[in-house]
Length: 399
Ligand code: PLP
Image (cartoon, rainbow, N blue to C red; front, side, top):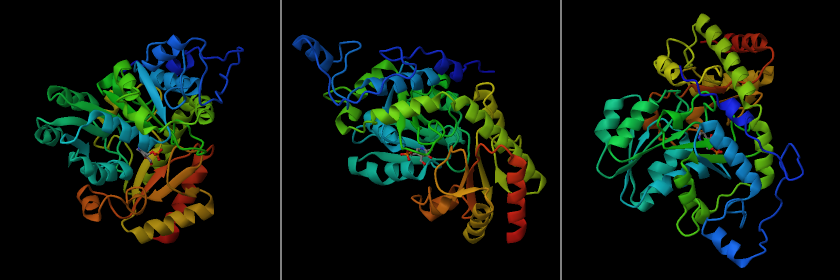
């Protein structure tokens, strides 16, 4: 068992403000003063510890949150961004040059898929999409110019489990980096400790958990983060997807309860999965022993955070999925909405929403049914009631 404890790593960080305020003061400044010109020029070169230059580069609020994210991941450093997509695109672009090659899991968040398959073409970066659970196909896809293997720990929306230690070995043997999106499994899995070089997050989801903002994070080595924000060549410094310090401050406060939320999301999802099995529903949940990635996930998990809050159920057709979601919303099971990691259960038909960027033939190839509903199970205090309402809905709609 993996004994890393991300919640304690976050809790044990001593972070307090200039007046002893338990929540560090929010930096409401775009720029910072210096008493000496030399200190300013040293800071420009990244040589002055504890000095801040300009908020697009660093600001104290973003530094607190970045340090907390790095502590959670067990990485040397972190950098927070204005969205999950900016974390993903910046991390990828920083590792790639024109003419390079990327291997990516075919099942990834639709925005990431679109970025890799449509946008990267502009820079002559070739992408091979593979079934990430088939390590042989990953090995075969490696080329001399492969610079990145990209995957999600538990993929969106099919909930396949990536073998991070093995993918890391494949990447290392070919001189490539492994970038892992851990949005679905914060605290549950710590990809950097399993060999990932860079870990990216949409903090919009579980990490913040309040659905009040969009944000992202990149975690990695000191060298990687420093080069990402280098004033001359750093992708994030130059593209500038800086997170607003007000938001950093509120996300940091929400991060302090993430472990408790993950445990409750996981307990509720497990309860629903067990009931879904009893009623013979077709579904995917990596917490169930029938799931093909169950043992692998167990071998990578940190103790005590559960198997996550995401379940995918297959209702066959988009019409049936829509009907079921509409009735579930009317009955109060949750909201028909994209996104995840909220206190309310959220559900959406992936093929027609968050994965609609993926062409239909590829959706079929990856095994994504048009009737797939992605459930982000909420923090329901009465999950038995929620199940009863779901079961009633399914009966009403019929098979
Ligand atoms: N990664 C995953 C797994 C996601 O589900 C999403 C959004 O749904 C993103 C990244 C993109 O994050 P954001 O919407 O914060 O840009």
